[in-house]
Length: 222
Image (cartoon, rainbow, N blue to C red):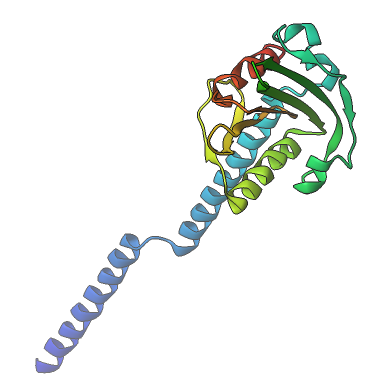
């Protein structure tokens, strides 16, 4: 009788352990499936990022330099106009910032004006607008980014806010009391960079107040 009771107890213990293991197994997640699901989610996320980047590239319009260049007559008439010049790949600005990867071609426009005072020339304005065409969007973005990095490493400027439409890095350098100042705006639109600098010397006027009218002329072409 005692022997039967012992076997019965062992039978129940084994049964309980077996049932418990089955329940525990059902509750625990399948590690293989979990890993597979995680890998699948990561893969889907990476694919989504790639698709988004490709979508951005496809939706950004690329330009030929000639189609967006303004004519001299588009700019404020009170300024004297210099000759528009071709920008070569060994141009000083391109070499100085080591940012000419993907550069196709460029053009520079020059403007100036001044006022004659009683004893001297004053309020001398000097304006240059540089257009750079790059092979693709990424090249233009890198060009602008490298200039920002260079400027931030060198210092000696302040960032300013301008009412312009492109993706622009706007800066200003002050030469001191009545010495003058220069405002600069490096803008990127698609694969095109348009870089405007306006300096005023021997003047109490502020270059920041005048540079926008030149940038607006350019941005109407996009």
